[in-house]
Length: 65
Image 1: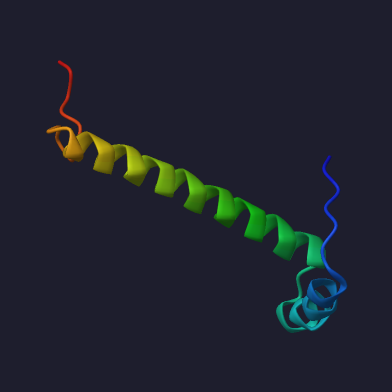
Image 2: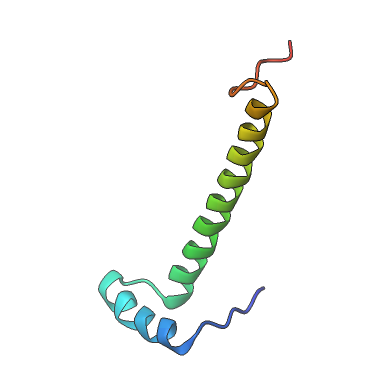
């Protein structure tokens, strides 16, 4: 399990959000971390594809079979 410390201002803003959505602060933070991780993974994939195109490669990988 991971414990995350957030600035007090963020924690304070999560309280009314939780009341409006019926979800806990933990749920909102967990979702934000997951979404951010997916965004970083997508960006890394895009950078790799852009680099491949710059080197004359395809933008869409071709099947190897």
